[in-house]
Image 1 (cartoon, protein in one colour):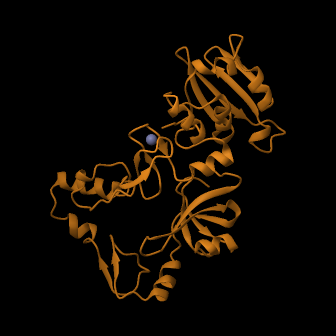
Image 2 (cartoon, helix red, strand yellow):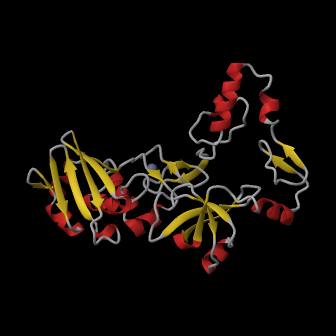
Image 3 (cartoon, rainbow, N blue to C red):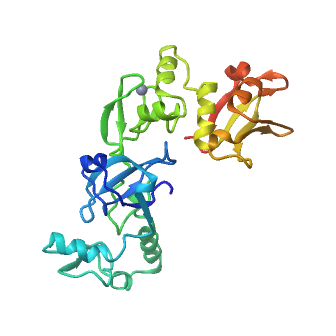
Length: 301
Ligand SMILES: [Zn+2]
């Protein structure tokens, strides 16, 4: 299971029922990794796309699909008996009822286009749901950026006004804090934050002291157990720390820890071992942490 996988709920549990979801409902995985075997899943209504719930779900209660299975379409259509089905592009064969295409079929739409417009059309068709693109580039397809930050919230670090998207991910222009909706939960469960790594609690202390946000050594190691692979810079050199499974490893917690850069490599058996002994040129890593730059996971934003 991974970020943005299409998943179906397969089990009924009071927590799910309370949130308004039932077995057979579909959603998208919104977390990068499982936390205690649970994934954040946003469930939405089939035809309206309206969000029903945004909850943590046990991995064993989910089934991953490549596409919404075709047999779900007619079944669902029978249930809601729509007077019209608006189809964004060419309808599936199994779609029944009063189908109106939102756009002409690709052929109808493209047969009179010159080659430049045809290329543009194909590009738009492929990219219309990709976030981060400039909507002004879309000529044929109306493009609503689902990740547009248009909601005002109070920054949890400095208290100024910050902007977030509909999923609760956002950024504060005043202090530079980047946040996700479940930051308090992630701090509690894993001792980190996403996408910043440094926890909100540490970030608030650093903001008060006028310091830039930076993960503590302990948070960096928390990040190692969450992401399995971490980086930092020291004296213009990049250092990597990663977990390596050994024959007795059953989870991240009993993997070996490898600490390396160009020309050096150290290996440790336990977290405690790594924290108390990892060193650069004989100086303990925990003691020179103040001089370390950009402690982050591999693709830290
Ligand atoms: Zn702020």
